[in-house]
Image 1 (spheres, one colour):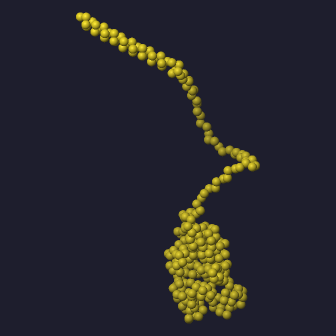
Image 2 (cartoon, helix red, strand yellow):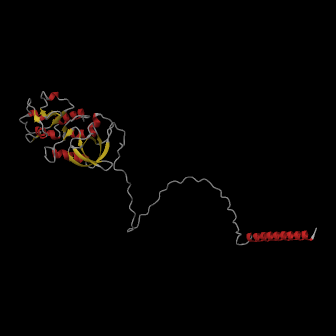
Length: 305
């Protein structure tokens, strides 16, 4: 081995020793840093295991509530907000209806209502006619309006619509139910249909205008009942101004009222031959002659009422 080769071997060995020394110093420094007090934190002993047991559910116990001291302001209780009306009937019923609240009474047979969405509407009762109580006051008109106001104003009712929904005055036409009926039997209609209640108590007479004739047969029977018992407007003879107990009027034939057809402008005595031909579905009646004339009817030339 010549001198040059030995010199190179010594250089390599020296470089290897330097690298080894540097690695050893780095190892020492790394170990000393990892064992420093700042880097080493003593870990706490693990917590002992706790034995768990099932406990029975808590039972409610009476607690006493201490009233606030006098003069201490209290937070007012927030009232629950519930919808005014529900468009869905609360019980199963044989009719399709809309629940509304009566806001005011215009006449014995006309009311104003508020729907669940907040809109308002004027409703005319189907199949009945009460005496006028406003512009042209008719006998028993005020009593009929007061009766309707006392039984409907401020209350929730149920509107049942017929074939035609509005009249020529753009009023909604409806059968007004005080409560949803369980059936369409006569006792249910008599006690829950306000149109029928008006007729039975003599605060309206029958006025049938096709095609809205659903309860016309019942209303005819109720009107006969009111006449026979001299209920309400049937207790007053408006031609003479005397009550039911007064002497008979000169024309007793009209004591039972007058009738006509919704298809004609003529009115008759009920026993007139032409009155007998009127279809029950078109039959209209008035308690007195002035009521028939006031709505534009003319007397029959045959029976001359």
